[in-house]
Structure formats: C-alpha cells, structure tokens
Image (tube, rainbow, N blue to C red; front, side, top):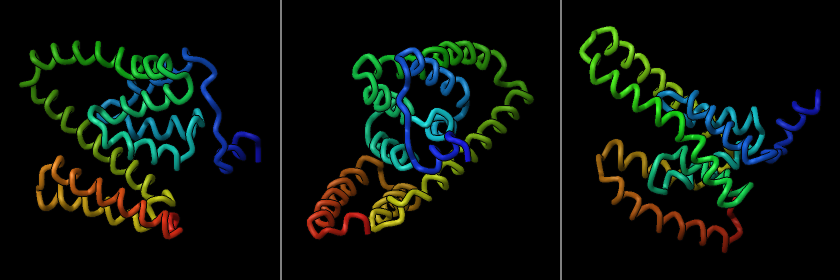
Length: 196
C-alpha cells in the first residue's frame, strides 16, 4: 500500500499549501458542481485534497446546514477560516462564487431567450435528475459516518419527517429540534454516553 492510500485509510489530513491553492480548489468545485456542489465537494475535499476526513466533512456540513445561505458557501468559509483565518474564508468563498456567478449571469440571459425550446427544457430536466442522484449518493455516503449510527439519528429522522411528510415549516422544526438535540447531547455527555 503506497503512502497516499495509507493516508486515506488512516484518516490523516493535510492542510492547503497556500491561499491561492484554496481559492483555485474551490473555484474548480464551483465549476464542477453544476446542479449541486456538495457531492463533488465531498469527493474533492475528503478523497482528492485530503483536507478533511469523512467525519470532519459530515460534521462541517451538518453545522453549515443550520446557518443561512448556501451550504457549500458556508463550508468554504469554514474550511478557509480553519486554515488561513479571515483571508482564507474570503479566498475560499470568492473561489466558490466568482466564476459560477459570471456563468450564471450568462446562462440566465441565454435561458430567457431559449427556455421555450423543447431540447433546452429536456436538457434541464435531465440535469435536475442527475443533481438529485448526486445529492442522494452523498447522503448515503454520509450516512455511513459513525456519528450517524447513534442516538443522534433520531433528531435527523424527526426533522426530515416533520419537513418532508408533515410539511411543517423548516423554521418551526429547527426551533423545536435544535434545543432538544442540544439538551440530549448535554445529557448524554453528562452520563458519559456521547458515542453510543
């Protein structure tokens, strides 16, 4: 087994070498993630760059989902800030937003002129299906995290059921679930069962 394979299996990580590397890595993620960046980000950040372990990625994404704004932008800010402070957070978020923002403007102009063309409408439906599949694949990989095989799963399932099946407003669900989950984590830590 070579050194890179050993690093992946042992869970060791490396830091970005520079702010420039951080910027260009997130710029590539923004360009690759048409229809959803998180699946591409998980593969790149955990397996390619090895800046995070799978458990760290799952932890950062779950925390970033509770914050306002796009998840991947929140993730980029967390990772940039973790390694280079404010400058890193700005570089990573500029990388993830810069070029895709310009492309989005161009595509918006083109879409307004060609949205009624059947081939364009069919292509967009196909892209939507692919994006949904990528997100589902990422969710299944994240579900393999040891953190999600504990009592904490109850809160994830309850939130999903409340929003998806009961059609309760997300803000209401979060207002109820967040204090309950914090209280349960505090109780579990006090009882010494945080990993069970």
